[in-house]
Amino acid sequence: MEEAEVNVQLVDVGELVLHPDNPRQGDIGAIATSIERNGWYGALVVQTETNRVLVGNHRLQACKQLGFTHIPVHWVDVDDVTARRILLADNRSSDLATYNETDLVALLKTQAEVDDLIGTGFDGDDLDELLEELSSAEEASTDECYTPKWFFDNLGLEFDLDPCSCPPEFSNVPAKTLWTIEDDGLSKDWFGRVWMNPPFSKPDPWVTKFIENGHGVALLPVSGGAKWVYRLWNVPEARLVPWHDLFDRPDGTQYGIPLEMMIWAIGEECIEALSNFEHKPKTGFSKMLVR
Image (tube, rainbow, N blue to C red; front, side):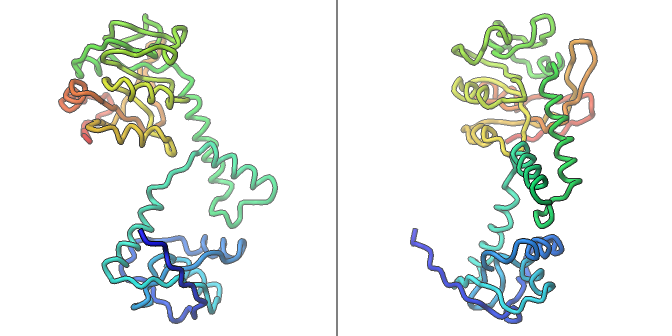
């Protein structure tokens, strides 16, 4: 790959053209507020031949709203096909980014304490909502929530090991060996066909062991910013199915965890079972997504 050639100039805003194919709809007011509060930084990316903006269409609109006459432009000499690719890639890469919500809340709280949130794109209501979501997730992660019996009946598999089992008297898992918290499943060598419904507060080390074992089915929360999601997604031939259902509780009640859930399978037998899995949730969710 060749090194990037930088060609940045200060350009009259009247010479720049909003890209007619840009599908993105931005919050011009929020961008303008950010520019007012934080000043201008960076440059627009503009196609040399057409003067069309490939990156920064909404920043250009905000600048016009604020009365700017000139802004920095990074010119790129590309054809229309490449220009559209740059436009799409810039928008899509933003979509694919996620937050570690715990770190985001800490950052916002620090900013709010020393200054305010004006110009960040967030406000006090956003922070309150994030705090409420984290509180709900933390409460859910510490609750004892067990996979219901109907799931294993429909899956039709027997397992050799459940390395992070609830107390045996509450377990519906058809596994020959059950390790509870006292057994410390992370410290042991896993074997055979594994069922895994790990502690949702920190599934990362459990997922690592699950992938290393290479044969099993796991029920996991899909949280933004979780690196293990991408590791598991990249396992060859892995399969996944959404889970939108209720868990059993020790007192006989049922509970719906406020997190996005997925069932993952790796290993030939487990993949086949999940591919043929007849999902009959109590919530009425029936469409299966197979990856």
